[in-house]
Amino acid sequence: MSSMSFARGKSTATWSLKEKTKAVIRQFRFFFAIPPMLVIVATFIAVRNYDLARLFWFSLSFIFVGGFLSSVNNTLDAEIDRSSKLMDTQNPVATGELSYREAQTMNLLLPVLSLIAAVLAGPYSVGLPIMAVMLVALYDVKPFRFKDRPLGVLIIPLSQCIPFYFGYTSAASSYVPPPWVVAVIAFLYFNTATVTHHVPDMELDLKLGIRNFVTTYGSEMARRYDMVSVFLAAVVLTISVVVGYLSILGLPLLLLSVARQLRVMHSGARALRDPVVVKKFLSGLLPNSVAVTISILGSMR
Image (cartoon, rainbow, N blue to C red; front, side, top):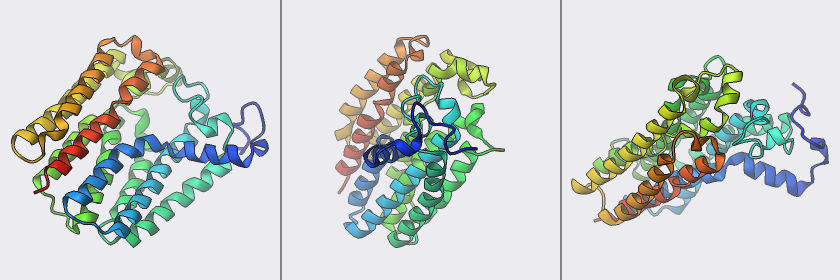
């Protein structure tokens, strides 16, 4: 495949260094790294591990591996994303700001950098880049390509839980988690089980013969799935507070954020075809994770 095949409007060679830098940053999709990063930092504090060097190297490993996941996704979906309502301007490979060759260089370099940073963070961290590479292969790469299968939606929340779990093992130097870790993993799983981001491109995916969750079960089922996921996220944290695993401090923010997300979902499946509506729903991931972070910190004794 030509490195120029995704260029739109002007050759990738004509983009300035400043534009290339912005494109590389967008290739990382840093927004989606913020929620788990908040919880990871809170975990280090909760177990009273103030080793800033270890936190730095683990965080760097996580940033690299998150960038790898996003970069592979953008690279392999570039042709599709050129016609996507949600991603047509968000994917720098599709817009031509990054060439296919430049994106592939990132795809090869980032997991190596992540593994090096994980080794420097300690032996309890190296599972993060290894598991991430496995998930990326299953989710994006043929012949697996679970992204285009109905149950591929299960990999999305799993990819959010793994960084937190290995963040905990790195902080605690132990694979045996306290009860609140199980609660937070369950929360992260339900909180990020988002399938509605496929709804705006449902018609395009149907034309391409993609059988993901939305094209298989419909936009209404996708809406209900995410409503249940968000509701279960709130239930998990509430139960964790009641049984004493986590502090009540983050609960008010969580309930307000969940109420806002459910209100967006209440607008109906047809409204979810608008990318703006989907982005409103996804914006709730940040306050939800802030709420969990506050609850973890508040549970310190």
